[in-house]
Length: 183
Image (cartoon, rainbow, N blue to C red; front, side, top):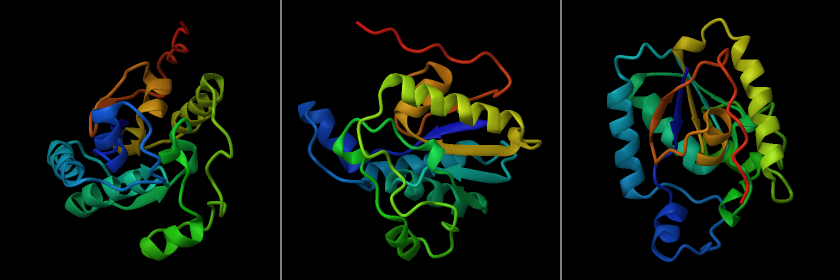
């Protein structure tokens, strides 16, 4: 399985400058983020992917859509892959609006309000990561699956802090990441 962090979002670009939450709700990709997604697609072209799973956040869906278009892959939207709900950008877009923006994707299994209604602590994201690990371990085709997700979720799965559009190999049957130490 390959984990792919979404490309640079409008939040990432603004936060990098001031290190303060810019208050953007479910931001999309920047031009840099779109270029990163295209570069990721090129890197993935010989990896034998057959499908993508993607978080319902706009930045992840945009990244997945770019990769899917280049590699001609189907996308499955999975709320479990969402970010750790710490900043304003982690407030999502209602399912009904996502359905209008991506009419070719299936959202029938996604609740109208699918993101957490409060900040998710480290234990919460680690539990979600463990749940996804169990789901992924039961897949028969996990070697051919790409997962477009977020910094916090990928960190919970692997212990790695990844940059935008980083690609990380992930064995769902391997050792689980340990919860990051708290200061």
